[in-house]
Length: 123
Ligand code: FES
Image (tube, rainbow, N blue to C red; front, side, top):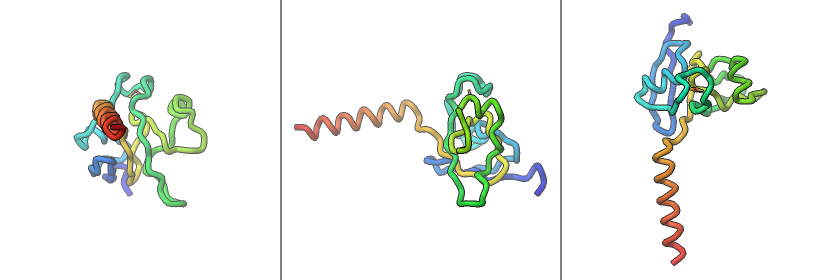
């Protein structure tokens, strides 16, 4: 496989698939898919807002992301587990399935609607 081969990345829950060049960061891939991740530090591993969850493959398979570097491990407190990654630091090296956090506005609206449902059910 060449170092510039395209890799398939699936973003959930949007269920969007994008082909990216090997070595692309998850954050770049998210943007290429027309999606967004909140960021404040512009990819310098400082704000920790770009956390994503990587779907773990079956035993013996890779999760499609580069190994976490020292900075990412320190910032996230990573040890052996690799499910939580920084989108600005993790690079795509193979097929990957990545769960993006729910948009904060949508999350707030969903919580408000749930609260209203709960309040109405008390009547
Ligand atoms: S963009 Fe700030 S930590 Fe990744």
